[in-house]
Image 1 (cartoon, rainbow, N blue to C red):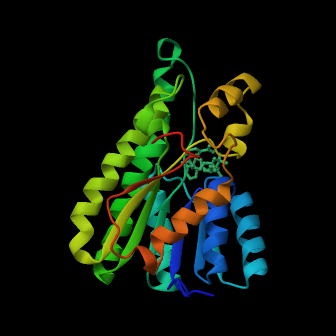
Image 2: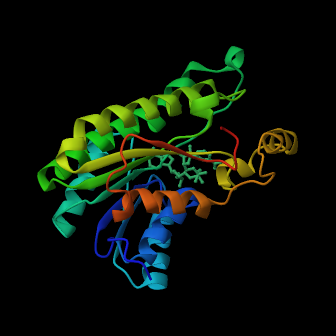
Length: 250
Ligand SMILES: NC(=O)c1ccc[n+]([C@@H]2O[C@H](COP(=O)([O-])OP(=O)(O)OC[C@H]3O[C@@H](n4cnc5c(N)ncnc54)[C@H](O)[C@@H]3O)[C@@H](O)[C@H]2O)c1
């Protein structure tokens, strides 16, 4: 097996109790990284962390975390550094949707989506980067979306948050490049998860019609690309947005 340089590395994945975050956690766990599962849903985070620990025989830590809160994020980072002394990988994965056409969109739903998807990633990146700069090493991956690149009907708030995340990725990458920290984004297309299971058959068909590969992606498809970006294979890759979308955007 190829050594990706992840053994005993400390990986913090936000919103990883389920879905894409969990799949990312499992990929890194398979490479023997130590995994910190954080989520607003602490009961599910604890169950997921226990399952992953048993399955891959690695150390995991589950923490309750609201990415939109600076106080909560500070507490999470303090706990991780106290336990493991470092943070090698941050995956800003936590995200939500509150879809409605622009004319009908409530400002509270605009604010909430921006707060969790974009401000949350800002707060986590800012606080974790202090630790990574001390170490002179680290990797950050932001989970954006093709919605942030091409727009999507009913997702003004979500696509704005994901487009913002791409801007955050590029600036953070420039600021941290000299200090041994690479920062990239992954833009998934239509991936099967609890987030997309709630879509109507009509909405699902419309999305699929835009996918040249003619099938939805799996969380593991996204996790494979994140694994590459946080591994030694991507040491000279920074500021990039990699679409994982079956060809939706090309
Ligand atoms: N599923 C897709 O098709 C798709 C496509 C493009 C991008 N994405 C992005 O991938 C990421 C994961 O999506 P998913 O499909 O796994 O969704 P999901 O809803 O299954 O999982 C999201 C997780 O984030 C957690 N979370 C929500 N708010 C939080 C907060 N304030 N703090 C911490 N955790 C919080 C949830 O409890 C949940 O466990 C999101 O950023 C999403 O925007 C998903």
